[in-house]
Image 1 (cartoon, one colour):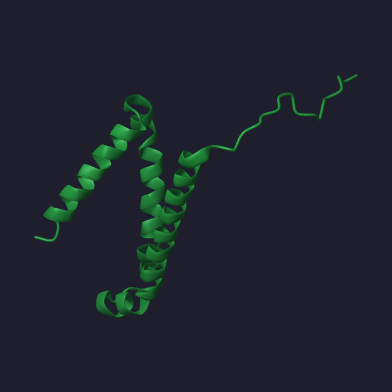
Image 2 (tube, one colour):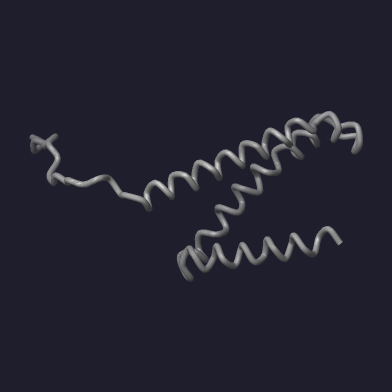
Amino acid sequence: MHAPISTEPTTRTTGTGGGGILLISAIVAALGSLLFGFDTAVISGTTEALRQVFTLNDNLLGFTVSSALIGTMAGSLLVGRPADWWGRRPVLAMLAVLFVIRFWVLPQ
């Protein structure tokens, strides 16, 4: 026979639930999701212009619109190992530097 499994919690915690760091983390995560959703909406709003300017068929238009999601998936898969090796904050700092360099180099 199987041993009975207790459904009662083994430890009881009394606290406020994380404090300020938890609230700030939740706000940053929500803001990131909001901005990503805004970007997706902006890209979706440009489909007719993309189709006319670049003469895209349905398949290429779908790939163009979904490329932001594909890039997000690839980035999240590729950043895991470096974050494990060097830590989350140094990797985010390096990515921020790369973003600033890209911002200044590409428009010229």
